[in-house]
Image (cartoon, rainbow, N blue to C red):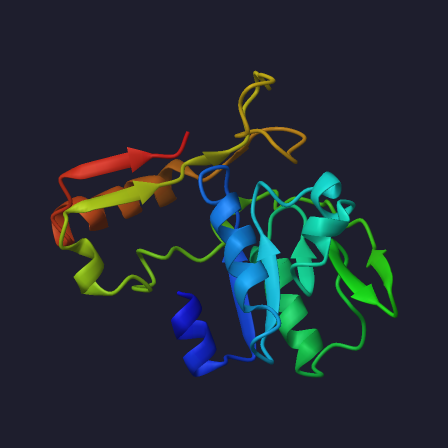
Length: 185
């Protein structure tokens, strides 16, 4: 991944950070950040207020998205391209040596407004070769156990509609012949 970033030097590199990959994300950023002109944005459950206030972590990325990132990332890209005149809330960034962060923790109430990576054919056919897929039917957890991160940054449980879930499952099983489904709940 580092080689690909260094060879292509994209304008923006986005990385989702989860408990199982956060150390890899940190290592990747530390390795490539000063070798390319690319800007880096991190998001995901591991990017929290604590993360952005930790200098060794916060300095790794140019931007950090706190909370649900689908629309915050879209607005960040629009801001960077000049289509919006102010930085969106919920994104931390450095300006003249100071961390700037306007809390924008508003979550997406209706998860169905997030485009489906399956129904919108974002996933290329080659990635169905192992006949497995991951499906998210909700975000958050009502139990909020201390050892678990699934509820991290969420004030309540948010659900996809059953109609959306059934459409995704039908697509994956009937059209893509997936035999192994992993449910992220």
